[in-house]
Image 1 (cartoon, rainbow, N blue to C red):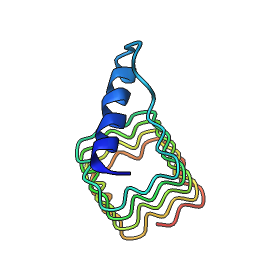
Image 2: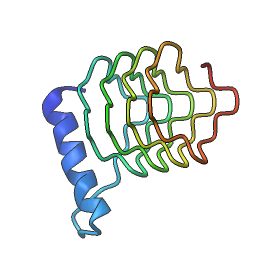
Image 3: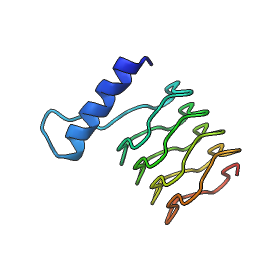
Length: 113
């Protein structure tokens, strides 16, 4: 997925979060987002199941209630990221920076920490 496509997905997701009729919940299931800069992005409730987020900068992002089941977050920057209630089952978090991340209620069964 290129930068322009990703920006459009984020724009439509933002509209969805604000309950705009033209908004669409972000479906990034299985997407290759390696190395993307998503610092501060609001992906609350998005579907990132099986996405490759290796080395992604998600510092300060909102991933509350996000489906990250089976995603690859190896080496990702998750400092100050809100992962409250996120599904992290079978997620690879090896080498990820989780400093001050909010993992309250996150589902971590079988996650590789």
